[in-house]
Length: 298
Image 1 (spheres, rainbow, N blue to C red):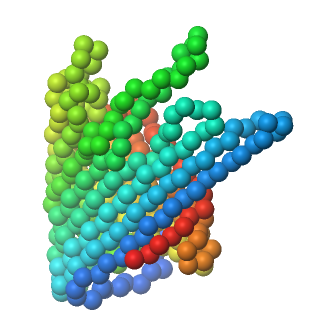
Image 2 (tube, helix red, strand yellow):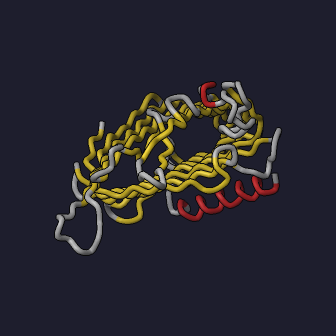
């Protein structure tokens, strides 16, 4: 729990430093919407005479970022949908492999305290993936590559909800602290069955079960700011500590999108994500995607 409180303090201080120059902006009453669809492409090619080494490949990634927000006097309701799916194909590899796969829905309702940036809040977060995930193995003798399905849609799926307190400077800078958060982890029971399964080794879910309940504390932060002209950084970070089991093992999920605008429709983008989930892998999971983006705003 000390680690979780330290994480809360560090996030608040870090976000404050980055956003201290922004002015308070109170949105008008009513609904506001904002959305963006983006295609990222990466490609490399080498002919057979190329002596420097390398393998031809092509990759694509599609992302969706959509917001629908409501405000009426002291009441606010913020909703975000984040989607990302990417594939890569390497020459001579029989399998197309995923580079990203994420579906996340966030909703926070808040009632503002008088003349303050603080709100009473209630949040809901749902997170899963779109498609099957595989573990790839190579036979040491034949060099044949095989794959085994390890995840799929709604396996795993995470659902969190709970009351708390929200600090909102504006729609681009929000921190939510929820000290009494319930979390469900849902999985397909086919992954927790069979003689080789070990209890708790599939996202913390016991053998033969399809769900797991946790109760703990959640801290989330959202920050979007402009670094320089046509360069915008968006940050999402989430911490979770389970009171019921190993509260010092804090789950961390950080996602960053750096967009460097070229014109209205083109941009260069860098996506970076770091996840620590002791129930999945006892180490940080890191992914990074960089490429040319085609944007459509709606």
